Image 1 (spheres, rainbow, N blue to C red):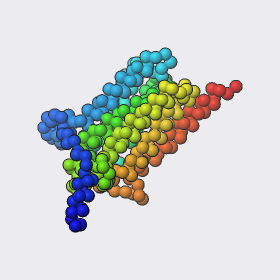
Image 2: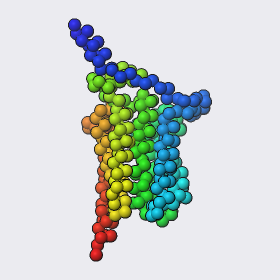
Image 3: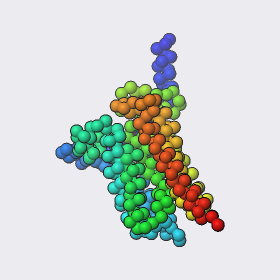
Length: 288
């Protein structure tokens, strides 16, 4: 009877089949010291996010009073791309590589071995934004707001790619929408936490920021506040969903929290600084 119940429970907990999509679109074979050279859905997700950012911000900078010109935008997209790739990969090997980088520096170039870190890519983008703003004497806070409102789409694309890869799956569960991921050795039904993150960090945060940017006076009266709210929104979404996500097997939990949650905490400090700057700007403008 127990065996029948266990089998029935297992069947119920796996009600949605995983759409087994090959993560590799085209493979060009092995490259010495680097590994397989291929076009993957993961890399296309980054390209899609960047193309959307360029297109959407391009529409905004055409309007009177925009925070930058089209030439500034082209320059920023270039440097932001470098920041995302270099920062994301370096961040992964440093934050999640457990010291392997120092013994094998070429690990940075083996993108199939590990992946990317959002927090590392974020640092790269922040540095690119600061560089472009100072180089062209632009208002840093207004530029930061503009970059913030398009960033969730990149996050959405990235999390969908994580789902296609069948990686970063959730914790074991018996919810009706649980899935069994092909590369999971345990073959347990799990939360599709990649989709939770795609919704929270991506779609939901994007909608909220669009309303704030286009339907309120925050961009003009308090530049920097929307960028701060982006960091708060991402931090809350990431920390919340991490409770449904399986911790990295080689790291586990530290004092009850994951590495992703730990790295998200400093974002609230940056958010507080941006919001403080924005609110002070508003007070200065209205001061008699």
